[in-house]
Amino acid sequence: MIPHKLPSDIPKFNGNPGEDPSNHVMTFHLWCSSNSLNDDSIRIRLFERTLTGSATKWYIELPRASFDNFTSLATTVLTHFQLPITYETGTKLLTNFKQTTATHISDHIHEWHRCRRMVKTYVLCHILVEWCHRGCG
Picture 1 (tube, rainbow, N blue to C red):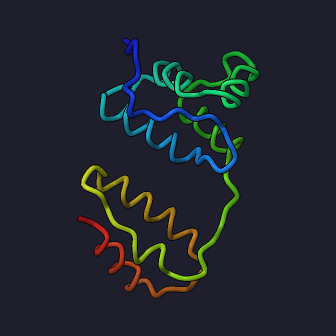
Picture 2 (picture 1 turned 120 degrees about the vertical axis):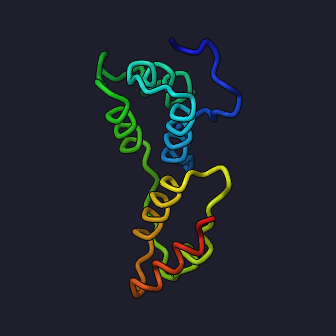
C-alpha cells in the first residue's frame, strides 16, 4: 500500500546546480528501508513525489514505463543530475569522517568507501583500517 502522504523530513529534489542527487536518493532509500517499503513499483511512485521544479519536468519527459525497478531509476537520476567530481588531495575527508547514531553501520561503511575513492593521496592500508574503525561508533 502506498502512503498517501510522505513525511516532511523527506527532502524534495529540484535538480538545481549544486544540489546533491546522491544525498537525495540515499535519504529516500533509507526512509523506504526503515518503513519496510521494498516493492519497487511503490518506491518508484513515491520517489516521483519527491521531485520538484526542473527535476519533475525532466522526469515527466522520460519515456513512459522507463523503469522496471528502483535501482534503474536511481541510477538514471544520479547520472543525469550528477555533481562534478572533486577529489581531495589530503586525508582530512577520511580522518574527520564519523558515524552518526542514526546511521546503520553498513551505510556508514558504504559512505566511507565512497569518500575513500575521492581521496587521491596514497595511504597505507593499515592506516585506512584504523581511520575507518575510529570513525565507527
